[in-house]
Length: 383
Image (cartoon, rainbow, N blue to C red; front, side, top):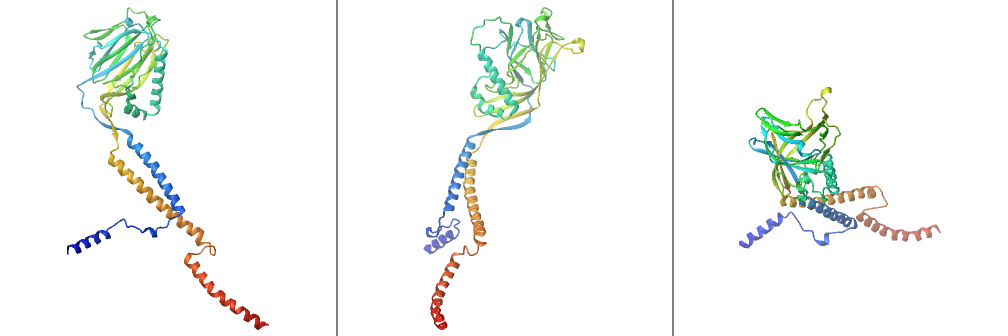
């Protein structure tokens, strides 16, 4: 009884076999089938290699949410060189709440405004990258993933000793501000604080020495991430007018960056530039200097690096192999059917099926001797 139940179970399993085996004697190979098989294997190889490279690659995923953190401080990283002496300029920050932010974190360093050959090459390369970023926004994803391999974005030091007079001032460092709109500005005279606001002592600076030609080597908000570029990095403005005002209107967006190399809470921003000449007689009022007016966005962006999971890669790989096999098999059968219809069915007499040809040949072999036997009798009767 057990053997009978086992046989029934095996027979039932055999009936459920979805992959029946065809005996080798029933299989017929052809040149067309071999050609299609080679094409199929080639296509599968190419698609498998491409799919493997896609599996190794990563992409950036952007998620948006409301920024609920308004009580924390925001860091501003500054590295700006002005074509004026350090004793003639001053930098400070005033936010929307009329809170005077101390600029103790900023340092004033006398430098040469003109760059050395190595610095000029670095600056030119930075401008090229910024231009490409403006044209192809997808390059920002590449910078996020590679982080420029940790390359520093700060201006490299001069490779030669300073032989020219130090007629420019490099203002660099960082300050912490409230997460509200504010105004960071560099103008003539050192800032002083008083209960009604602030002022700059510009009375002792000659008007002929005004020159707000400047170079922004780095300006960012939040935590500094090596290799991440910002819109104003590498910006250089030159002017020959003593009454020039440069304005930058910035909208800051908080960003949480999570990649396989770095995780940081930083900020990105968009900027609109404007410059004009101060001429009170023509109605253009204001103060000469560099003004960076910033405002924070209520949205926060989370940028995370994503990778294809292994199970998805295996599923896609199986789909490629099975799809190529099925598609090439159907195409081969369809092309053979069309060839059979066009080249064989409509050319009667040129081609006949094998069974019809054999039957007609046997019939001809039976009729030929009979015709041969009657021909002499016909000739004798006629004689």
